[in-house]
Length: 376
Image 1 (tube, rainbow, N blue to C red):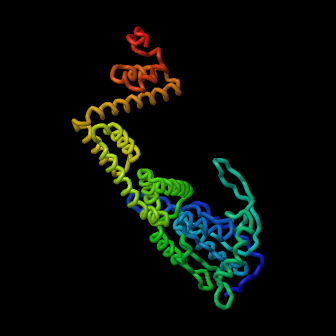
Image 2: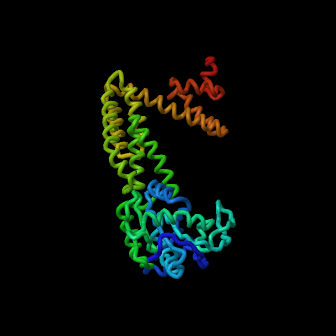
Image 3: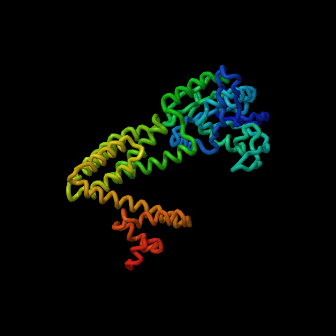
C-alpha cells in the first residue's frame, strides 16, 4: 500500500503503447485476430477528460502509477498499455495515465497531415510531450480514489462510463490481470455502445443541433431524418436516447402535415397542394414515408376532377428543372449541352411556362425560328 503523495525518480522504460500492432490472418479457415488500434490518450486535466468522454460517449480508462513502485509499473505497462488485446479492446476509449514520476525525454517521429514530424516526448509515455502532462492529475486522483486510511493503492486501474459511473476498478495493491479490465470494457460497450470517433462526433453534434432546431421549427422531415441518423450512429448513448424520445413526435408531425396537404387536393387548390406534396416527397427522400407520399401523388394525378390542374403544375416543375440545369451548364461553360437543354425548354411543350420565358430572355439566339420571325 503506497502513501498518498510521494515523489522521486523513475527508471526509463521506452514502451510504446500507442503503436499499432496485431496479428494477421493465416489461412482462410483460421479466425482473424483483432487488429490493435492506437490508444487515444487524454493529455489535459481530469475534468476535461471527463467532459470529452461524456461528449463522445467514450469510456474513460484511468491508470494510476506511483514513482516508488517502478518494478510493478514496468509489469503494469506491459500488461495494460502494451498488450495488443488490451489496446484493441480500448478502441474509442479515452485513456488517461497518471504517473507522478519524472522521466528522461526522447524524440519521436509522427506523421501529421501526411508529413513526418519530430517532437520531444516522455521516454516512458511517448504520447505525452512532457512528464508534466502525466503528472498533473495525480493529486486530484489520489484524493478522489484514496482508501479510508488516506493511502492510495498503486498501480490502480479505473474504468468510468461516459456518464461518469464506475464500470470497473482494479484496486488490489498490485498489478492485477488484464482479463478483469477486458471484462469491464465488454460491459461498457454492451451498455453504452461504441464511443464516437472524431468524424462521428462532428456528424452527431451537427445533427443534434439541426434536429433540435428542426423540431422547434416543426420542420418534421428534417427532424425525422436527423434524429434517425443520430439513432443509427449511436443508439445506446445519451444522444441515441434523446433521438428515440424525439422520433415519435417528429413522425406524428410529419404524418399530420401530409394529411393536411393531401386534404387540399381539391379543385381550385390542387395545383398548390400537389406542388407542396412533391416538395415534401423530396424532403423525405430515403425515409419510409417517401413511398407513401409517392402513392398519394400518383393517386391525385389519376383523379379526373383535378387532373388538368396537376398536369399544368407538373409541366411547370419540369420546365423549372430544365432551366436550373441550363443555368448550371452555363456556369460550367458547356455550350453544346447548354444549347440542347435550352432548345428543349423553348420547344412547344414548355413554350408557355414562366421558365421558358426566362430562358428566351437569357438565350434568345436559340429561340425557335418562328418566334424570331414573329419578333418574339
